[in-house]
Structure formats: C-alpha cells, structure tokens
Length: 356
Image 1: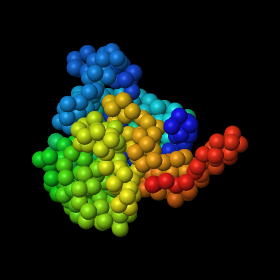
Image 2: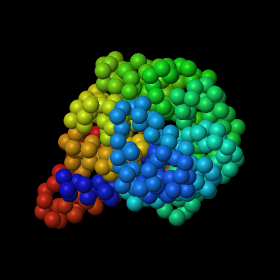
Image 3: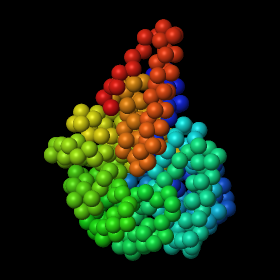
Image 4: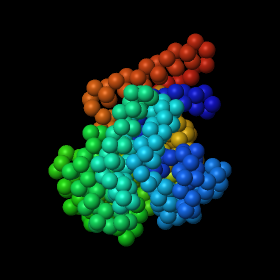
C-alpha cells in the first residue's frame, strides 16, 4: 500500500464535497480562537484533536457551529478561504467545489457584499498563486429552517459571486424533511444553479428519494444509506446521479458504524457513480489523499483503479468542458508516468481500472 499511497499523494484531484469552515486547519482554528477568547473552542492545536471527537451527528453539528462562531469579519473569511486552498494545493487538488454557508456569516453582521468580495478575492488569488481552481456551493444550514433557506436563496440569486455554481442543503436530516426547502431550491435552480443537497447520510433512503423528487438533486451529498434500497440504487445508476461519499466523516459522525462496514463496495457493485471526498477534513483528522487510500483499500484498487475513481469526480463536477478535459488528461499522464516508472523498476504492478 505504501507505493499506492505515494501514487495517491501526487495524483491530480478534484473534490466536490468539502466544507469551507470545516476545512480550517488546527493552526487557523487556534489562531481564530485566540483572537476571540469568548469562544469555547480550544486555543491549543493539540487540544483541538480532542475537541473534534464526536459522540454522534448532533454533537458534530454543535462543535461545527462553535467553529463557525469564530468567523466574525470579512478578513477572517478571506484568510480562511485562501489558507484552505493552500492546504488543497499541497495535496495536488486542482479543482474544488467548496461548500459555503453565507447565512451563518450574514447573521453575524458580516455584510453580504463584503462576504462576497472576500471569497472572490481569495478565489482569484488561489488560482493565481496556487493553481487551485475554486467554485462555490451556497449551502442552507437546515437546522435554522425556512428563514435560512430564504436568505440563502436570496444571496445566491441576487448577489451571486462569479464562482457560484451550485446550491446545497446541510445540517441535520432528522426533523428537517427535504421537501421543506423546495421553494428555495426552485428559486436557485431557476437562476441556473445546480442542486446538490445532503441526503441519506444520517437517515434512510427515503431522504435521498425526497432530495431527487422535491429538490431535483443532480448529485447527492453523502447518500451512503441509499445502499438499503435496491430500487434507489438502480435509479441512481440508471440516471447517472453521483454520490459524494466521505468515508472517514461518515464513520466519525456515526452514520456508518465502521470503515470495515462502509457500503462503498456495495454502491460500486450496484453501478452507482461514486466520488471520494473529505467533508470537514481537519475536524475528522483526514485529508483527500487519505480518503482515496481508504477507498482503494475497501475496493481493492490498484493505481489504475484509483485514477479511474479520481476521474469520476472530474466527470461529476461542474467544471467547464475544457477544464474537465485538461484535468482528466493530467490524471492520465500521472498514471502513465507512474506505470512507466513501475515497469522500469521491474515491479510489474498492475494498472487496471479496478472497481471504479
């Protein structure tokens, strides 16, 4: 696995399910906590590891909101966004659709125009300085109900930043049916945004069906519990609707009991398109390269299989066609160079496409 880990580390990647505040590194979170001493978030980066140990999904949401409370002005937002991109560049992530929750900042008295300016300034700087292309998904914090949905839809349609491509829904699923948010999604879709709600992470397959029928989902955030409904699996496979799977996250929030029991292999066997993602990587002690290594282990993939899995994310992304072609070609070139090097070393390592 060590050779495959090296292949994954330098593999050009796209990520489709990764949260803005949830991607703050311990260094940045600790710095923000020191600037805002009234916060319960630990100031010591080592203590953050214990703080980011979750009892269940509800506890995860509680901790996540406490970190959101550290983002209090436009400079915090700009710094966070650019530093997230820096961490992505170190992992050879070339393209990411970063999920933002602007409502959480606007209700904390950060003016919406200042918020938009901060994220766009960071986006253009990240592409210029780091070679990381960022696009935005504006996400409804579902636990805050219809006011949050209405305001998020307003921001997405009346003040859209240039990088905005999609509209999402996060937070707890229990007690917050997907259909409740249909008017907000209808408005966003009418404005040309793609629908990418969370569904079927901590609840059953019906939530995924509701996301498809009520919110016209084009991709499903998580969707791991779709595995319990053969008809749903067939529908997802037939329609080519991708799932944004985040293995470590789904175990950490107790949505899946263990990595050994993760339904990723069953989803692949059912013909469902799967993308691999990190969700809130520092909070879960992971990164995208680690998630690919986990997927490779669960699926029994070699380098070719991992490359095919990485291309799933490119195909499922909302990147423009030229950008998709360029990134897919870069993945192919990395695999070809790796295969040649392995052959030259006489290892005879395979490069089949595996289960992806």
